[in-house]
Image (cartoon, rainbow, N blue to C red; front, side, top):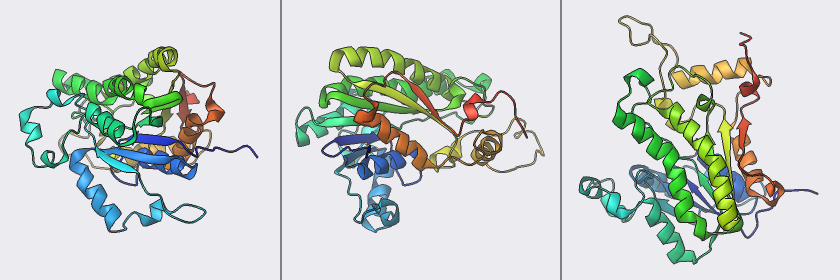
Length: 310
């Protein structure tokens, strides 16, 4: 029987803070396939995640089909805004949400894994990172700082991740990031430079596939996932005109997008995080050994539509 087998592999999934998003779904799918999984979590959310795990609040989400429970090998503090410790302002280092975590930069995470497991020590690296401080702003209302911040955290961090984790990954390893259709189509309400960041991320996927393939033998791919009403997505967008005085308030933007995509897709059903996780596990496996430099849509086919049906 042909199956996805990641036994003996180790994965690092950057950008997991709870059990509700794509990052967790990918981590779970990799673990179900047999991989050991390490997480990278934004420092202000790390304590909350650890408390949820310690108190058993995530036990149901961690249950494995054959029995037993997923145990993450490491959970590291990670803020993708910073490449190395020298880049971190003193005000951030001394912030109460950061100061207890030590080096939480991308280089710091790589160094911790190298110290714990040696080099090379990884087979799969997943970039589930995105942030735009002005994502609710129209592009015309986005500041230079907000725009460049979105590019830095949501796109350049993938380049930085390859730079620092490439040597830690065994030949034939898999790097994966997550994008969204706003990279190529207009999604009103998805602002603050985030659409530009996703477009950059997809372009960089192709270039990094070439460079990392020739340098280390690694594969680099990207999943363009449909909308999901996760906690992280709750900060995204607003309807055009919603800020007008007396304008009615409807459903949250992300819920509107989920419903719109559901009724206008070739497969008229809401996307499940698990479906993205399964595709990620495939791309990480030997079954996808010939796949690199690709942006794969996992959105029930919505990206193929040119006209709304409702």
